[in-house]
Length: 99
Image (cartoon, rainbow, N blue to C red):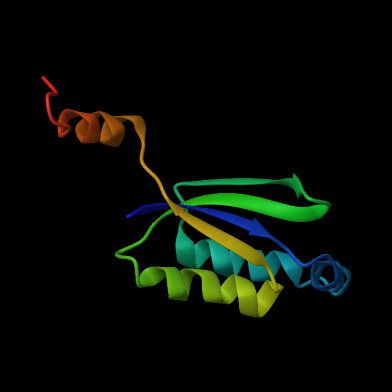
């Protein structure tokens, strides 16, 4: 299940991770585990943030996907099922009256 994750890092904790040099290892571990299809990094709401597109086996994987962000980064995480253009076309084709 393709899922878009919007993650906002806790500023105080991420400042500490940057200061002690562990932020890169933390991010490498998280991204290495998730293997995102896409990853974008930016500032949002005055915080460090990222948007990741990941493939989850099923809905229950949201727990194991989000928990590391909460535990290691005290992050705010939102998860949204999403689709690409090809999947959208397939879905539209299943609508009643679709040709």
